Length: 131
Image (cartoon, rainbow, N blue to C red; front, top):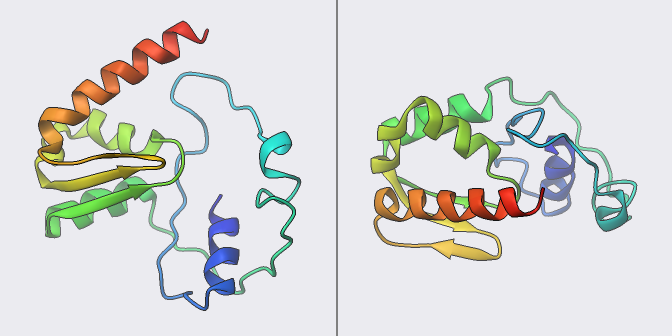
């Protein structure tokens, strides 16, 4: 998670980009690793050097809430949407402050307040079918 993000940022010489600790488990399903997909190091056996220094102590949820209250922001999600889901569960009105939400490999554009609930409903239907 966060350590791997910092490794990639170090490799790109961009340790100025904040990395925050997200949720420690999925919302509903039990955690399963993806060693078969991402390898032992989580980065496809890249074995990049560790980045030195402490991790940011602010939670991803707290950071997202604070930033969205300060200004309208676009989001880029490259993994599970757990932190975004937690934020919306605790403060649904915050979606009015979201610009474009990029979901790898898909993107939700336009009025996020109107589109995100539809996306979440489709996601829930898919999740229920995969049980």
